[in-house]
Image (cartoon, rainbow, N blue to C red; front, side, top):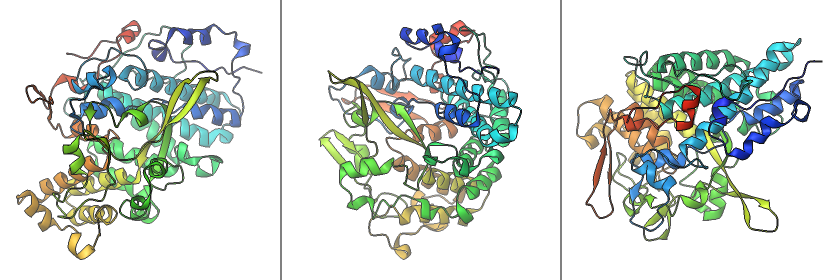
Length: 485
């Protein structure tokens, strides 16, 4: 019987701690043998990046202000100043790079086993999941570490390595190729893998796997970046039964507002919460640090969360807390602390991260419909969202119309006004979740960071190369050129 062995990606090895080298020094018969459908399915639990991208992309965005406090850690400070990270630990870009390529390696190993199997039909659902996982990890890498997709320049903009086979040596040579090439490969894996997804194959915790809904949610995000708006609407419609997003939205202005802080933190990332289309476990200190980070949600951003200054004219109903006068937060994450030494309080923090949610799909569909000129459909989605976010919601008083949105933004351009409304509500909704950074990239929105004393003002322009997070320097061993600075 041929042995199928699990290999770590060489691109991941470039940035792991020295102790991880011992994995490669083990004899083959000490490693995991993967040779059945159930073992392939088990292997695919490692095909999702076990790292948190939120801490650094949130700090890079306009959802983080300088509080002027003493909690001044490098992992929070450097991205706020758009500097190259000097850390390799969890919650940093290098750590995410490593874990994303490790996830890709697991997906590739699963696909190799499947391709060599005599009964390929038995592996069909796992093949679909592996292809979706490989596409997703590469999408996140190219989004974070390369130029944002632009059809006019993608064929020449450097991308990231798209790895499609298990590596058998420690230092493999790679090419970044182009953003266009990476997007072509993502789309190939996405379109091939999605029809193979079988929700019935997930006997345990389907929210931690690419279900059909999660796969369509990913497709909607991917095509929004490509500006293929009809496909965004198509996949968003298929995310929900009968295309209705409302039953899947978080009940923020009702159920959530009756929960205490600790209960709400657990509920937000609970696998049974219908809004969570795909969750992933990540090694991270985000749940404990998001409140006290110097560069984060201050009273100005905190006030935005309950402001009436929005197109509806109504008060938003997010539950906002503060631990100090400078530290505002919305309960979203709950840390699971895993001890590594039973005799000392030493261990790792783990957070559950919502990779795709119902609200994002709704916003993506609304934006795509706006770009297609379907303004009424876009407004209908926004109103569904407001019905779950406005304090004391009354449809006749708080629902938007095209005219109401135009009046608020003082423009006759319906498209521009609706897009502004979508981006505003999305900015508020995803504070502490990092998705604002993706909108900043797609729309080339400038970011202004001002020091607490007002003496220093920094601007990240629409075409600033610092929008691309720097490739880990160790990756040069694999032949990769760094991003310009």
